Amino acid sequence: MMENTRPSIKNEAQYEALRDQGYSREKAARIANAPNSGTKGGKASKYEDRTKEEIYDQAKKVSIQGRSKMSKEELIEALRNN
Image (cartoon, rainbow, N blue to C red; front, top):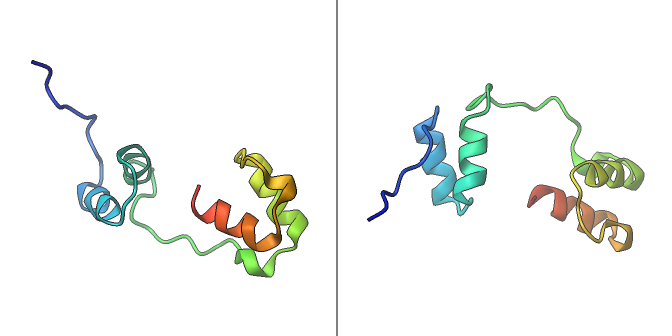
C-alpha cells in the first residue's frame, strides 16, 4: 500500500487556509513555501489601474492561453485565477 505523503510545508496554517479556499494542493504548497510566505505585498499597482497592454504583457509572461482574444477584464480575471 502506498503512503499518502507530501513534501514539508513551511507555513502549514497558510497552506490549510488556501486549501479551504479551494486552491489546489500544488498551488497552496507553492504559495505556503514561498520565502515571503504570509507577508502582504501590495507594491504592484492594481490591474484595473494598468493599461490593457501592460496586463497583456503580464498574461504573456505567465503563459495565459487565449490571451490575444481577451478583453482587459477577461485578462484580469485570467491572471487572478492563474
